[in-house]
Amino acid sequence: MAKPIVAIIGRPNVGKSTLFNKLAGRRIAIVEDTPGVTRDRLYCEVEWLNHKFTLIDTGGIEMETEDVILKQMRRQAEIAIETADVILFMVDGKTGITADDYEVANMLRRTHKPIVLAVNKIDNIEMEANKYDFYNLGLGEPITISAALGLGLGDMLDEIVKHFKTVSDDEEESPEIKVAIIGRPNAGKSTLLNRIVGEERSIVSDIPGTTRDAIDSYVEIGEDKFLFIDTAGIRRKSKVKEEVEKYSVLRTIAAIERADVCLVMIDAQEGVTEQDERIAGYAHEAGKGVIIVVNKWDVIEKDDKTMNEFTKNIRNDLAFLDYAPIIFISAKTGQRVNKMIELIKYVANQHAIRIKTGVLNEVISEAVMMKQPPIEKGKPLKIYYVTQASTKPPTFVFFVNDPEVVHFSYERYLENQLRQHFGLQGTPIRFIYRSKQ
Ligand code: GDP
Ligand code: GDP
Picture 1 (cartoon, rainbow, N blue to C red):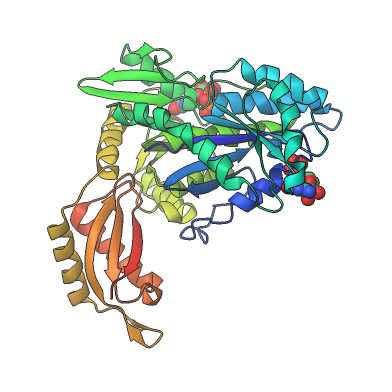
Picture 2: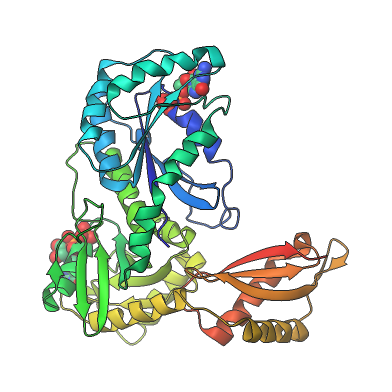
């Protein structure tokens, strides 16, 4: 299921970071130690009443200092309009409306994206009346919040998630495999996309009914339908390298969220760089199917050992993606591109796999018999029952005597056992533990 994206925009000092930090409190802990996964302030995962979404802070994109605030806000708004499903426009209830707020509201009103207007710094009931002024922005009902005190956040989140339904319903019904080609600039993403799209005489267009501004490529290959999500298409002109980079991170994250399978593209001439690690980390964290695509294989001088050497280095540098298959291609000559398409299908299936409870429990109890859990905190782990709770990625709920006594290395062991029996290649899998009395 595609996780919706919510973008916060607003003038400096209205309280965006404060809100961000309040909402980002609950980070998924499993990948905390994953190398290559960095926590920048640009985005976080938020969960509210069974809805999960990605919150991005466009204000995290710093601009040139001589940029006036208005110019910055215009940029933020553009980025939000381009990448988000819902835009959270934050204003300052203490200072009241400014000319810049009006300007941005004008821009926002012209988009078809849902907008939630949050009036921040309403720290007490007496200040509540400050909100009336903001009706003048023409963006509907202002919601009063205090990010600092945590007031009104529930109502605001209710309003945000209200806009999700239609978006995710549309996407869930679509039969195509959604693929994001991600990687550093110049890795060869556009070349690959052009090759796939060109060769297969596909229809390249905006998909009707989607709310995206980005141009996705819809491709039919034989019986199969693919949607290649644009990440490289629109290039932002900016003199500031950092700005371009952060912007491309946001686009990458937005593409990953919508994808079933991510092709992490590595330039064979460069090898795995830190930026590659980071990009791969986003895909891993998002729980998507992943294929490591080593491109420009045509320019590498090779003998019979080259591929193994590359594989070894990649496994070392991207150790957290040990489940992801590696394929060596040339987007330029088309070498193994067809094979890669087959691999995408395979990984998409693995990512969506449903394992019957009976078989699952057989495999787990056999695994436990072969190797007993270590005694942790003076208590042995007892696994009573396992069931698959969801797919994309496959998520398994273990009912155990005490979730606290599950040891990391044992979890690893069980994961390997599942992979040995069921394949699950290319997909991360998740374990959840519940205690059963
Ligand atoms: P940003 O530039 O939009 O990210 O704004 P910050 O989150 O850095 O906040 C700017 C200032 O406003 C800081 O001094 C915050 O402490 C303050 N602030 C943020 N939220 C609130 C609030 O709800 N009430 C009050 N009174 N101050 C707030
Ligand atoms: P993007 O920034 O990731 O979209 O990368 P591009 O598709 O624009 O490619 C960057 C450069 O690498 C271009 O000059 C391409 O012609 C070149 N390139 C892309 N794929 C290959 C490949 O498989 N082999 C070779 N030799 N060059 C490639």
